[in-house]
Length: 214
Image (cartoon, rainbow, N blue to C red; front, top):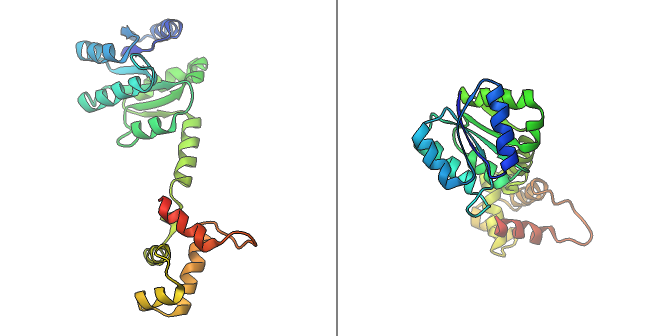
């Protein structure tokens, strides 16, 4: 497999080069910044790019941005992103569309040579390789993303009217439903938004605040 490595750490770049070469792969180019990465990819048309998320020139998300450009311009090239730790926003953006030929691993995983090389092979052949920690954190993020998604369409209508300061009687009149139906909807809203009854918190206000924050 023909591989390009983009990593600004000299030692890690050399280590990856040796590791991949020993496994029978051809490292056609190594670079230490995102701008050069795009240049060498266009020049060499590799099968796979191993890319650090944070690279020069800004040391923020330059590697990720370059990876997204590569995905858009040369979709057949596999991308294996390496990161020091899970960066949820970056991972979500990278994995937002098709995950074929895509991997996201923490750098610590490189120490397990067998697993790392297996991930390289899988991504290079069009598969997916995601670090278990990345998966766990993205799932946790998805679960806490928007509690309002649990609400039914009618419950969202009721909450929107609550946010306008309307009483249950006023909501019942607006929606042309019974007062009891509104009470049931309000109770369901509290339950789905994880707002149990307490002595000190006003659940109606807390529910409205969540609506306004969404």
